[in-house]
Length: 414
Image (cartoon, rainbow, N blue to C red; front, side, top):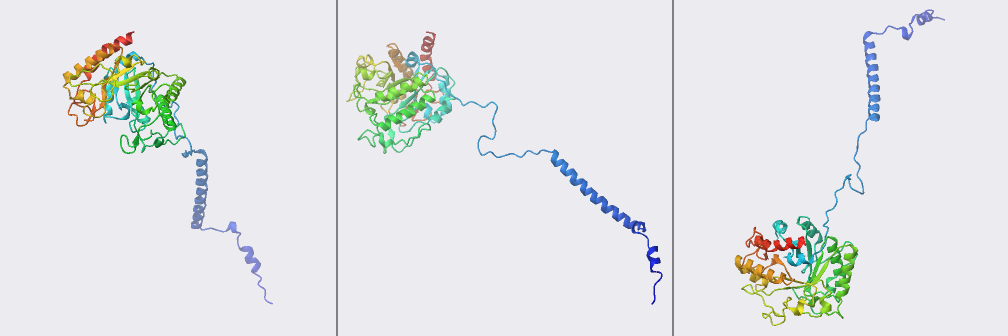
């Protein structure tokens, strides 16, 4: 048997791993690998520390509520109505038909005109003729009226449209205009229109809603148009209007505000009925010379067109308010007035103002009223409206304000 006697010797002579000689190149490679690994570990640790010590704001989307809440929230503007002086209403009342309803299509100048004026009472400022009132729009205009004191009026028209819709945010009720109509008055003013009747519960509900909302925005005077049409029983013993008036006055007391309620009563002479209202209102029946009659009824009409300053009405009512009547026809008071030259217009207003206020009756100056667009006289923002602003064609405002100025100073000083 052959045995390799040198095997053990060779194994013993082979050096241990840690004692072997390593080439320089291999050493460098090993060091590079180790250092890169160490660097990765250090970077990962540093990134972890950074994440844990740094806060990043991430906006959250709220399902409810505002995104920003001010520590000092802006309060919603609101008109605060004051006390009503009937002396000022009579002496410094102004017809401002549809001023709060956007009539005239010239809000900016009409607002400036009112701010420059001596008007204290704005008669019929909020309209409802064939349209439910726009309360949001009215408030936007009221917010720009700077003059004080001021009393806003609302017209409760004898004309409604059955095509219109109206909703009250405070009242869950679907108002039905076709259920408000007096029998036999469909299409009275135009197609799908009628005369509303206070005998109809739905119309009384509608009046309750719009008068309450009007008081909520600060309106204080309410005028029923041609009450002998709206009230099918215009006498004290049978009328249903008492329910409406009682509700309006109760709501005003609840709000601790003063209101006045009027009506166009024409030739009604039931004293108890007339005194249900704080005032009654009517036109003057102007002729081309600027004169008016003094009888009970105008001689120009076959039916009685009442002249309310006559004793048979004025002594029965609480207060009388008069104006240049308008119906959109060329022969009405406003049509006749606008066709006069400026000198005649101012002379007429001065004479009427003196005639009626000297009798403790009110005469309201024209500041915005409807005209027939074919009237061929002076006009305001367009041919359908008279306004005395110096920015328009009539330029009557300085003279009108001068007529009222002395009266307002006298009344305020009392």
